[in-house]
Amino acid sequence: MLVNGNSKQLWRIFIAVPIPEEIKQTMNSWSREHRAQLQFRKWVHAEDYHITVQFLGDTEVDRIGKLKEVLMRGVAEMAPFKMEAVGVGTFGRPRQPRVLWGGVNGDITALHDLYHDVTSSSAELGYIAEDRAYHPHITIARKYREEEELNPEVISALNTNASFGTWIADRIVIYRTNLGNQPMYEEIASMSLKKP
Image (cartoon, rainbow, N blue to C red; front, side, top):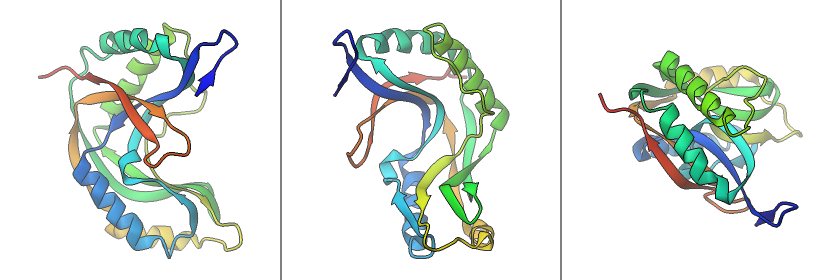
């Protein structure tokens, strides 16, 4: 448990679009099938798959209720939208990537609108959106083993069978990070998008 200078309890939190259980399991099966071929040091637990919307960092626990309120207002007029988990890729150097990710497709415009609504809402409480462009993805693994370089053609070849499924994104979640635990992310609040 973290505490700040005022002895207030802090939770490391972020806002995300959750992924349905059946898609998590499909991604996990793909992950297990390719672990020997893709030498990453850390593989994400199946229950931790999600699409990050905004990372907020260490937050006083007593501010989370207010955060939920502003987020509920911020997404109140946002309708559910179709998402697809498909394809894989990497961030970082092609031969020694830092992240292996699952791709996101579907109504990407709606997802970017959601990102804008969430970051605008959280800004009311002093949270600042990242300077870099928003690149939605699902993290599958981290930290490629440095002793052996990855052939980027392997990732290209794996893209052909990396189709994980579609769903309707109808809510956002505030997750708490519990470092060292498996799974690591704990749902602490959920906000539904507007029903059509």
